[in-house]
Image (cartoon, rainbow, N blue to C red; front, top):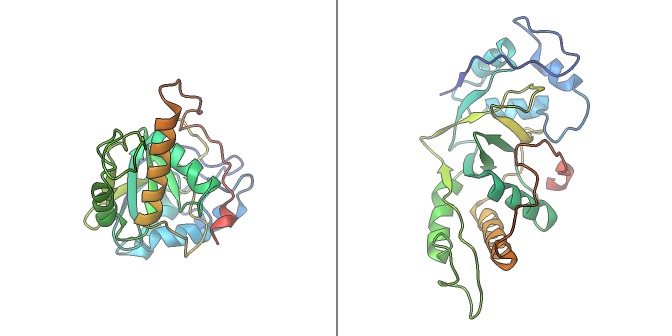
Length: 232
């Protein structure tokens, strides 16, 4: 199952080829600037591999390189869908104190964290077992330990599909976009244990801060500060 949707977003600056039949891989190889939010040719090949018919998917990308798409979960990746601010804080923890992240996108005020297959089934069970989904200071925490609630997570696995950003896109206004784009045929993907760790760290941090005004930038701003080389 894969489908690519009509979109009017322009290509990256300097790419004046809006005609059909553009060499999408040559275009991706020629992109310059910060690479964290730009899909590479190898990353595009990995994404296409999630579809039942990768060659057909690649052909559609060549026809419409600026269109967002829909790809199935469960084989190449699962997706954990979290509120934007909580997701931004998870990313900060993953990159500052943890192993980094896999590809990450934003869409409709949510953050999509691409995860290892099987994560969608196991992560909710781990959160429920640890009683992190209920919030407050009660549950499995030690004496005197306080924590904030983990917001509802939408976990997409086998049988689900997600919207993914265009391979080439210059505008960050509206529609899905990459925060950490796929850049290799074999990207490292966090499993349920890593994402559970990030959720717990963010929840504890939110509780220790107490009520406060948000000091983080909007989650849809393009601050590409992630050193993607750390994942490998």
